[in-house]
View 1 (cartoon, rainbow, N blue to C red):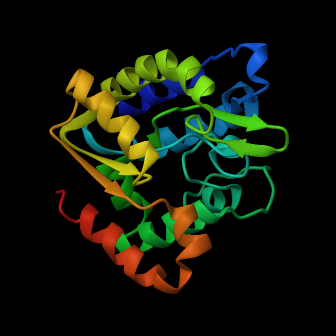
View 2: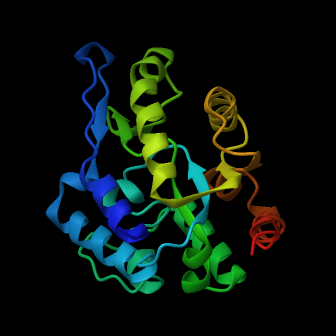
Length: 224
């Protein structure tokens, strides 16, 4: 199996059930046949090889990005316009996706980026509480409930084809700390490189957008 086969198999078979007491909904776009088609088309287009890649790990899917498309940090517009994957998921942009695809363009485009990097989430399924996105670490009981799932799927994602020299972490505070604890326990990667989360940048540091884009690209260009 090549990289794309393993990635498609991984996402297609994700499942998670939470205790009702948490009052938290699991966001699993991969049950949707249209998402399955897009995920297959995307990974077949950009990952049909056996090359190991530098992994970039975010937090968990949100409802307007990969919670819709099944592709991390990729909203429906980016999936069509940058990745060339037709979809009927709407026209709504998502802030993190906007940042990531600006960064990818500065790096050299999607073909170059996905040839060298795999971008996903430490928790590959998302969460909703009421009508809003929820992160796995937003509630201590939720984090405890999903940690076994995260440990299992983190290992499974690495086996898709991760380079073990470095892991890039999106989310420089709580997500970094959690991933560092995983890495301390299992010794997957020699080095963890944290970067500020795109949503934080786009909402609170937009005046320094170019600076953050350059920082991201500089990190990526360390790898060949």
